[in-house]
Length: 115
Image 1 (cartoon, rainbow, N blue to C red):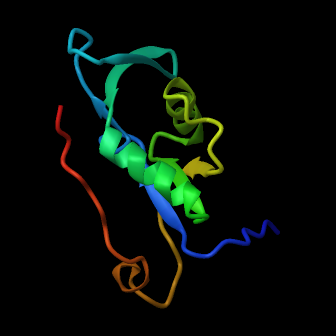
Image 2 (cartoon, one colour):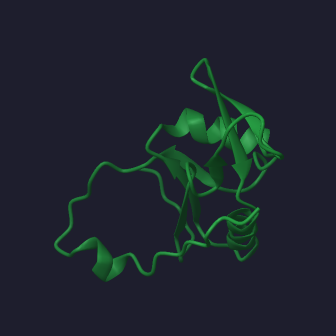
């Protein structure tokens, strides 16, 4: 059994949330290794500020991706965020609960990307 002894869990997605996919020639584009293929993206600075603030507040902060935990590690490392106290995992594909996710998961936050 793995026990996470923090309350107030907050989760951050990677693709189109922590990073925004873009073309290589765009200003600020960073090259990532997406399982052996080049993927270009820009950091979403406002969401990264929220991620850091979540950790600083002592929340159980999760970083996940539907593309797997290895992709999360690549992105966090390339952005210099790999020393943050976060839990990294693949995005859940489902859940078993007597309640609907919107009844217990809280609010969705998303700040539109601005260059």
